[in-house]
Image (cartoon, rainbow, N blue to C red):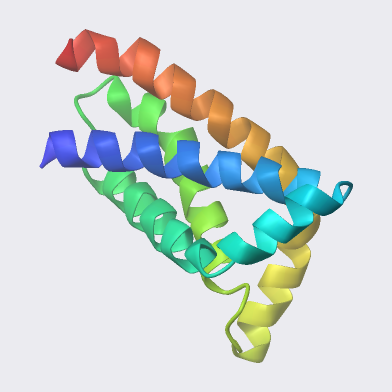
Length: 130
């Protein structure tokens, strides 16, 4: 289960961060915007993958030192997953308020997610799996 948690968290935040940066580029370029709208249905699947990876990262750390190594990527994965899952669904009022407060921070979360995925893979993953 620990290997599944590691890979789900690492790939979840990497894909989620890349999707966030792609959405940011889509705001300025029409070509990226058309591709982004074609990939919009996948956004919910990316959100589920990020959210599950974050939950697994919180509850299945890979050793004592991994508790600190998994905390930041897991929280970022949960936040990105939440934002991606509820982007196109009608949510209750309290979830909509949370979503509206988190939306301005989506690009910094994406940049942190990509950095956390690379650190998580190369620093923590190489000690355990390679």
